[in-house]
Length: 465
Image (cartoon, rainbow, N blue to C red; front, side):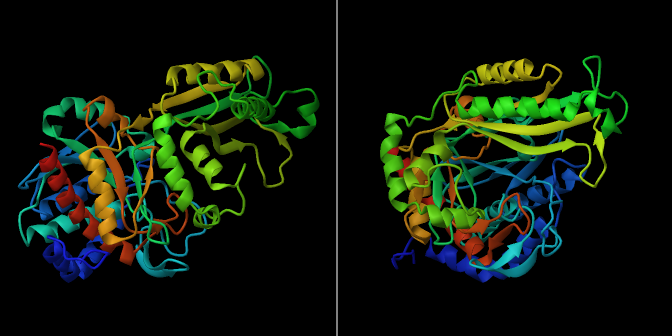
């Protein structure tokens, strides 16, 4: 039965998932115990092999694709119906932040306050928990009957790095990725079990600012005693000037290529619906903050999350905070700029370089990486299936015109020319933070929704044809 208490054609598959769930849960834990930190030298091949094994365990075939970085995984599971492309990622963020109550790759079970029994591990929320759950749900489904759709898989090992090699993989294997639509699934539900559907995402311009002593001034080879700071320039202060100029320009929407946030006319209805169901206080609790940066009404918060550019300082390194009194000889900062759909990315990069050069010409802009934004339609069968399948397992979902985060959905939009949707039932939290978790109940719900999604898509695709 679905959340309304009605029988559904896939009830037998849901029963099979329940029968297999303890076994599936241990498989999820084992996957999470495999460190797949793409920013480190971990053995990412082992992660790719685990993904391939999950696809093969669900009755499919898998191919590990070498790249100049970490491998991708392509897969296929046969089904009696239309062909869908499922995007996923097996890499995770580093887990070196303080505050973990257990080792980040131990995948222990813990009672998370306000969420309940959960698996605590890096990748539980983003996004190995949902990837494993989807594949394990397919394994249960195939024990009952054929799948209602054929599923292709494109699983990225470098999403947390901006997916630098994914365009080449998609270009080289385009014939193997031919499908009617693409989708991604995560554990998106909040603690009320209200899940989300995304029709696109913001883009990212990430870069590093660096400053070292040289002909312009500053210490060259090593830090100096701070008494010399009265006559020797500090790379740290130069970097601060550059950061201040960028932050000021971002606050005034004065970076080339950016303007004040505006809501496209076609998004107004979706935004109004989101406002009615959005609880700013609950959102603050979910993200672990006490106050908003700006206005705290639902409309303002949602508008900013989806459409407002945002400059973020990820980290700053210079000198010492352990009591040394020095003039540092180098300073670095890592930043990202979140940009809405329709932004001229090249103009933004040129604007950043101009502002830094004017404020502190000795500061260099390095390591620029462009992650374009994306957008799709709400009226496609794949978006409809994502919404309806989430209704089957919980309250009606929220439909977001744009996610505030990034994923490489632009490749489906611009390269494969496919409609796409992202979403998923089940609650998880603390992505990219200590004690990241996925609730055990949420993993079961996600498995159920995965099967309902395939049936809804197959039905919608038949109705459209």
